[in-house]
Length: 437
Image 1 (cartoon, helix red, strand yellow):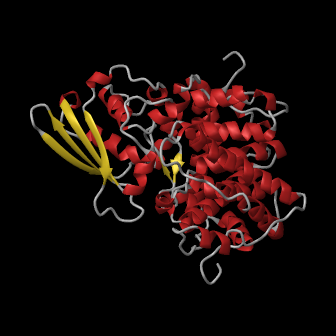
Image 2 (cartoon, one colour; image 1 turned 30 degrees about the vertical axis):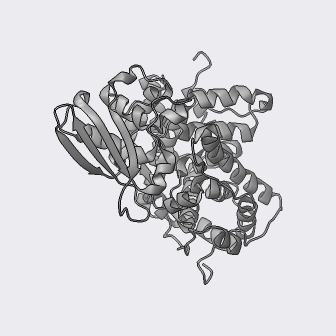
Image 3 (cartoon, one colour; image 1 turned 180 degrees about the horizontal axis):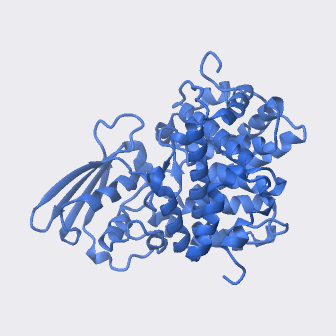
């Protein structure tokens, strides 16, 4: 690292190349991240936003690649659709301290290029480790969730740097080329966070960051370069939440990542857990007050009427309605913008959590029933344990309509991908999305 904790292209390249020495536990966790991401991509392929983007951009479809949502695509379009599908149901993983969603940013790009180039499975695992280490390091330097306060979304601000690192490993870029890839990726740094609804633009921003990182690595492979200091002095001067970057231990990015159990915006996942844990009967609850750290309020609303499925996933009303119906973990519930019976809902209020520490994701939930009973619950957003990720992925695939036997076969292959010698025959899209439906 530089003396002020900034990150030059060479330093990002150094993090990338060290990730191959990650311990076995981190490698195993990287494989589970791949398993979960594939399941999220397959389910997300039928999300209204993904199908609408695929249809709207049909004119781009010209190439040999396939996403889970469409076939006959160019490489960039295939990666864009799968990255979008990975995150849009909010079931993908998150690294809380950096406030990035690494699976959606890293895995679609790395997986597509790994299959296209026919590299071995251990190279793909190395790529995932590298991408996670870089994107989480950059996200933490940006300030993690504190960046929300200043109008930036770390996932789309630094996502291209992580994708460039991962794809660079797949392409076997040397240190100089990897530094160039980081520079090309950093040159497009953006990632604004909306002051009101997130909508399609929010989700597309992360998908586009993944594509930009892949493109940066492919251009660097051909000898193109860019400034090595975009993510050093300029970014530190531009971002009020910037703090000194700390080089991670190899594999630390993936081991710090958490897998979401509920298909709703991350700030509301602690609320979902609280609604499952309360001793009060939810059908008798007449008032709900949710306190969240102030920066997280940028991501959520209490709106009952929302324009689309992306807003439903960020709505406290939809989370409460899902809990009432026992479907708080069912991604398909949140895909309907209109609630079936809004008259059943209590009054709903979101407000800042007093004295919440910087970077906190916790919530406090106040419930009151029609008989005056109350309950106050404090929760952190839960995560899926490592030993339950396979079960979650199997359930996600079957929710997407994949037959159980097919799901088990694909999951089995993914779990031993570290030993695969040539990924060109993996054919995940064809296996999980047959032509006949």
